[in-house]
Figure 1 (tube, rainbow, N blue to C red):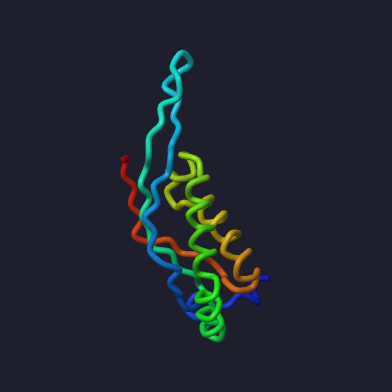
Figure 2: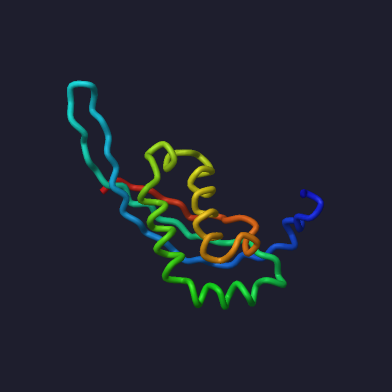
Length: 123
């Protein structure tokens, strides 16, 4: 399978947009305390790595499915646990996002997702 995967240089970045998502976070203060609810603002840019030959198809698919893809990205982020949001490389979140985007665009459409300019702050 690795022999069939294009080299990193052969992939193009396709922007899937900028996101700024308020995420409800429930934290337990201890065994005798109730849950403390707070919000976390997650901001990032999302890119899909695609082969250059697929780039024009990706542009067409993005135009048709942009609303659904953005909704899926927001839903995945809001359903993420605090632990997933605090992972250094956001590996679990990226995995869930990849599955959600591939459900919209097809399993062979993207090779990987990149998340850049990640920032979090409590609201």
